[in-house]
Image (cartoon, rainbow, N blue to C red; front, side):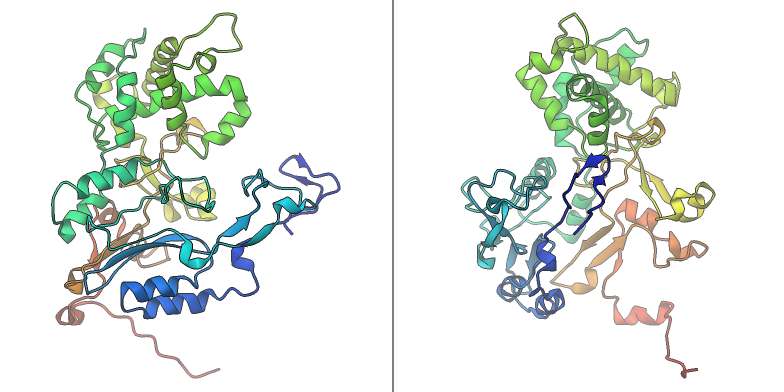
Length: 428
């Protein structure tokens, strides 16, 4: 049970209680045994077999072995729902109606998987991992496919890739989503004094979300204004702002523009009939006004990373302003929500927090199965949890650049690295 308090975030539950069923809380779950079985696997088939014991959370697990085999399996327990279940777990269901009960499990060997594909590589990026004819319902909250398509684009560009190539791919900042939106953005014209200069800055933009470029900044500010103008009047400002904390509305905006959807583009609050073309121009002026107020009137000094900064909050001390400088981590960054180097652009919240990156790849790793000494990893802070020690943030800039440290150092190097030895003391 989650709550029987009668209300939940302003929603009146009346005489009902809110309860949750989760696959990870079933009585027969043994995640430790499942993890140990996968850790002991020596080959791809052994790993795939061991993964059938994994319960939750469901994940796309990519694996390779020293024999040259590769595989991907979506490991996890999936409930089967009845055909007349019209909610499919997307919203709270009346628990007294049997049609919403789980009626079994998808057989573990029937979850999506790919083993030794003909192209010689596997890529996943939180996109939908099954075709339309897949017989089971897995979910609906898939990421838009831009990152996946970009990974495939790069992998298909040559026959072989080195570990350095794959490390560079993890840092890739080309946004196919930006390329899809650009034709509409380039149509924008407005009355703002910086309008002509801003369009000139977009003329050579190819969707590369470079930290020192102004074009990504203009794109995201305009896209944000477009989403607000066409959706907030229809669904309500409060509901829209709550949604803005979770998504960018890129697909929704792009869909409205591609369809030239007059119903969405018309503002129901006015007596006039607004067109999509008018909304493009209005959002342009709104975006340029916002950016000039925040960054000044000299567009030559605007940069994407002036507002797009990686922000790693410490919970709870980053919420205490005097302590945030000690505990919080921040760094100016390129990339965006839809680049392989995924640094999600935040659009909701206070104006001063817009465009920050608060979600991204905290761990980066490249494993070389031919010579494991060439395997590298890095994470986004350091090796210490104590903010007054250098190790608290020592890896931050290396993480941003995609540098790494050896996963398995060469034996000859061990004597040159500081080693902390912990010895149990006598009981007192």
